[in-house]
Image (cartoon, rainbow, N blue to C red):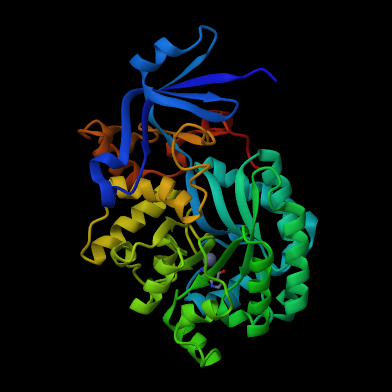
Length: 441
Ligand code: GUN
Ligand code: ZN
């Protein structure tokens, strides 16, 4: 096969490390830059004046003016079956699950129901500039088949898993320890490592699994060491009290998962708001990651995530939308709310840290930073173009923004899906705001 090289010119930003640690050395910024992509992988990135002279004559250079080219967003925690119940009124976590979530999820055993919803969901991700996500299915294997079938078609790097849940949920949403093991194993064999797809062993959270089922989850991780583990942790105070009652022999909430062998560098715990120092330390020691979900934490009234503490303990943190408890697919909106959460805590969230969290930070949290997250040579060329003029208000405000740092802050404060003008997957255009078809769903 002959090599296909493409070049994309515009204002370019990407991260090399965490700005909270390395500040000026943590990122590269090219006011007039070029990203060169060969066969879907990054070949090089740099100033246009340097790169132009190195390009073969037949390479087409695509120009993106008035915008910012950055790596695709990474969403480290989201539920695809909850798309249709986003913005459900009035409850905190446990009541919200009973009133809205379980009835919605019970419909996904029918593959013909699940398929168009998986397609709509993946389209929403790309529309919002998210090119990789860690995704909850439902208890039904059909939900995961529907999701992976569409993700494979789109050639996106995605992680998904069937929920394991054998108690404290309606009968039509529960499995048994053995059934959850067998069904998860079959899905791993079918999908994990196929193209750009990965499987995540997905116990919903400690209250909906018996110890026997959590042991089965641990057994799967032993048998398949490179699959992911995805669950919820310490999101809501009533949930934490319930976990204490259900697992009195465990030291704390995280210890429930720990005692069942569920902590590793491919383990991602959503929320982690109400943690003690022992739990932070254990997450750090095992290289486990937290997913910070600002819009969800505010919407469900769960609490204010302690980002500085996670940082002190050197824990990898990614950003999650947690749709449908989260109120937007847009990671720009997640950052908008994250900034306000830090304000309420009396802390600062810098724009560099924000965009790091949404890109390379997420890739690191998912242990996928050898493949995605920035424009290092050889990485997969998933990237987006953010439009500084996406709304009248943004255009007017941008006229008063003095530098890239301020423009980033305005993007994350005012931006949403309208600010994503293009999304590229492996160097191919996968979403173009100007040529958007109306959804069939
Ligand atoms: N904890 C257990 N299940 C869920 C869920 O579906 N959403 C959220 N936000 N938290 C959970
Ligand atoms: Zn969740």
